[in-house]
Image 1 (tube, one colour):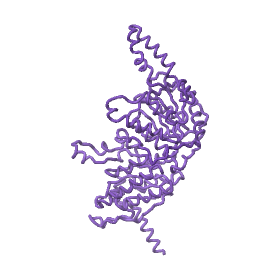
Image 2 (cartoon, rainbow, N blue to C red):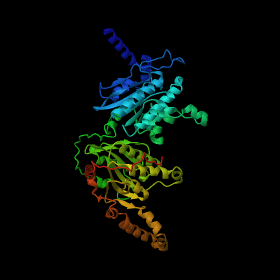
Image 3 (tube, helix red, strand yellow):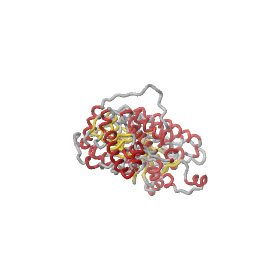
Image 4 (cartoon, rainbow, N blue to C red):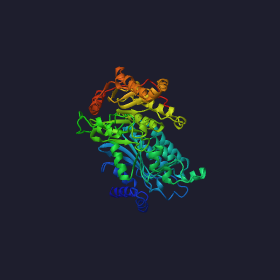
Length: 515
């Protein structure tokens, strides 16, 4: 028995060496951690339990017969994050460039199935050269098996992808199906076809980083939800995100004790929002003043900044926050903002996270590019997301809510549970200036020199009759008009009242969201 135990220890030690000391040194020289080092930083100390450390690839052709490594090119298993069970896999770039083989795919699928069966989050740490060419269709089939599980477990357990190295070709589609993508600046890269193929087909010259780096995906494509400068920062923020999320779709989000009083009023909110409807302000500051301890984990911070989405807590309970951002494009809804907000709303609905919507929206973005780009189709996604969501939904109209954008932003008409407004709120088909210019065009023109004075008088009358919040409140479209300083306690009271809310959808296989 002693000899067998010694053999076991030797094999375990061998499996922990990855591709060998030289390969590990190369990984460190690139400023990157190894697969096991990453898992150690992700998990609570000494909690990671490895699966399948002794499997090896089965291919004996193309020079691979003598290049077998215990565990192959991925480390899989489970551990704990802040005491809660989490499953994970980490591709090992020191072993054959982290390439995906049949066995690597099987290891990943096994840990995904365990996450689904036990109802625990799954984190994938990606650092791979792509499909293992020597295995041909076997590696492609492995990708398909992974994609299937990403889809089946979507909305069942949270799935998080962390891009810590290259991810090219078919490898990008597993992260794309998951709920959130984290990237490390200067290290993580994602693209369907690399720079060489782009140049051969289109003639355009582009670097790996410009084509698929973190900055490109955080600002232009919207593929990346979070970007950080180092692996340590990135993995720490993955841990932070998990703290907001339930383990699965049958649980409520975790309660976190806070010393921030539930009845805390904030008179500064009176002065934060300008009276003039066209003057900008930062909706993030409104959010920070409302949530517990000012903590707000923003999602997609650099993409479609005219809408703000992210996670915070109210009285210790996680909430998803969606707000128009007057500091960028006046908070207008365009294609990217609609898609960004819709996907976040649907994520929150999947995992029982209540939604708080802060509204200050002048409408949808006009323009030929927006119309040709499908603003109708993409804007409809946001309508669909809010209407479909069955979690508690509370909205506060801060300043203006015009036209179809008023309806879209969690209005009472889309089954919002509690709709509040500040006294500064304006609800109308359009802004008073535009409305008067259309309705009274002829009268203003006939007034000649007195036209401007007449216009101002008509604007004031329009505001008094149509845009103040009491008109909508009188119709029941708003449940109350509140003192801005009381926004936090009123939201907490509303969510407490809605804590046991039960809502449902008509029986169906699934809806047909306008993708």
